[in-house]
Image (cartoon, rainbow, N blue to C red; front, side, top):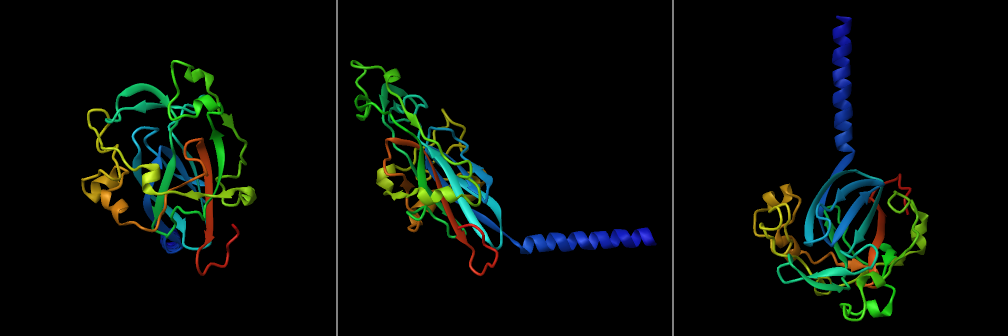
Length: 263
């Protein structure tokens, strides 16, 4: 009888703990579009990684658990599809599959809208991790291969604080506000192509035609998410082409909270 009572009490305690945990948590969903790749952190924990390393650009559905109150701190690392040594990218033809043979400057951009109301805007603080190419001759849209080789182009890597993705990072006080861009500035989407990519694992926010359920299951986002959203704005640092890798942060205190510690 005593052992049975203990088991009952343990079951009741577990139920209470689970119930309390659910009451004290919130589910955040939404989408992130990155040109070309990102990692997203929430309160120091990685909650999303772009499943496509570079090409094509794609929108990704995100879903993670957050505390119901307190500090909400978001951080992302974003990077363009540029070579790690030259800062240039291979120019693809209109299909997005075939390389034209050219080495060119590329542009970045990230757009995000989450269910807690967090959106990309100039409220984010950003700093540049990698920039280039440094040589003036490499900074035209595409380099002249008759004059120089891509290997003659170089980049610069900048130091950044180890706390960049943690809940609190005082270093962000010296970072600059994100620069806002238009959809046309950053470009949006590339038609899915099942002959080259695993469809619908790779999909485009603008060209998605399947159901919401399929796209969310596969980590992608349907077209209407972009068509109807007017609150989020594409952001990057001050130079879409020259700044190839960036980190950005945004924090706020959930309304009604009394235990906020992040800025």
